[in-house]
Length: 296
Image (cartoon, rainbow, N blue to C red):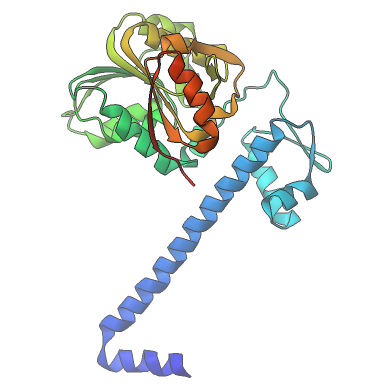
């Protein structure tokens, strides 16, 4: 009854209040959608992290792990299996065989720790001049650099970054963008392989910005020799090597050694208590470490 009287009064006397009421309801719906998306991303990361050290996880355990119903767990499993991040088997899930391409689809990675990645990119760009020549190795973290680059030259194997810069500067008044050749990794949206490495060798840059699958006490790890090779070529032809790493990269995942810490000048990463011992080890190897607040 109260709601009917409220709406009737507003129809007669104050349409603006009714309008605000509708906007609030709609915004509440948007907030709920954002919260649901955030939780879904957290569930995905939790399951993949646990599966990295296991041979099999039952569906019921997945449901308990994320605090959801078995139906929700099955939907999560189906989504990850469709993205080729795990194998769906009777009663649960298994990791992909070692020979499978372990790269995570760009669209999925882009959603993870998005605010933290934007902070990393903004901090990294403080290290170079506005008119610098930059190598940018493709990744969801380095793609965030595209929002802060206004001029200079960008040499990248990232189709997403090239498209972002095209959208920002449709009149061709922004940075010069150079995309070398190579073999397209459809999942990651980057150009890889020996053709890409040879093309990179034709250039020299003031700095290279790169990320990777993981890091450890020795250096940087990536998903495959093909992607690691292009990053190595960029590092070899740049005066300053800057790695951007969100806090999840400290797991040490990755089958291919990209570079050792002796080849990295700066690490821009998130400040997490559990990662500080490894950061101290990295500092002792001559790497300058710059930190930003970590995602919760």
